Length: 218
Image (cartoon, helix red, strand yellow):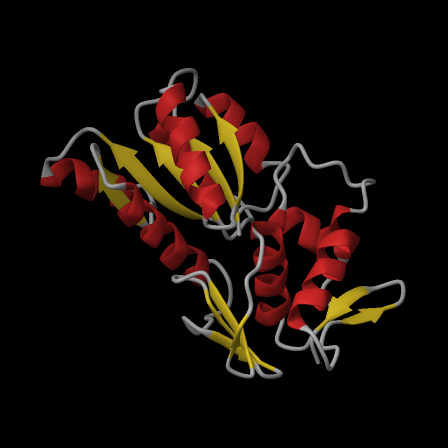
């Protein structure tokens, strides 16, 4: 998934980003509300982790703009305020979930994963196709009962291909969802990740290249 983390405490923002990247998400960072709106206008995020108390543009206003926009991003709002009235107010702005500080990183990661499933057409918690079983929560992949160890980008690419349910996924789409904003679209990173994925999934080949269109698992 593509996730935007918006948090003005830079050490905390960087720690959240690293935790989510370990779960094979592509993560971008913004340290103020204005930068968050700028990035949200450029990228198609699945989830936005949004601190409520932000400089330049308040988190409440960022949330309102995200909800009003055309994107399907789900918003997980973070705040140091633990009162019920604060949580109700945040949800009333259009946030999909609410987490108070301090929080446990595994809980945040689980909430991001759950929101990500809701950001698209409903997907099952475990993805299955062509003998492949992928469990996003456990970060495990099996093919025909055999465990397949995958690197983060390979796991992210396979997730997008399985979510497509047999449809073709373009290289541009894979780059958008599996790599962050610093990725160079001309490096061949997608092609290399697919090549490694095919090798690890072993025979018979399951990831097809559709010339001029992208990749699919039929």
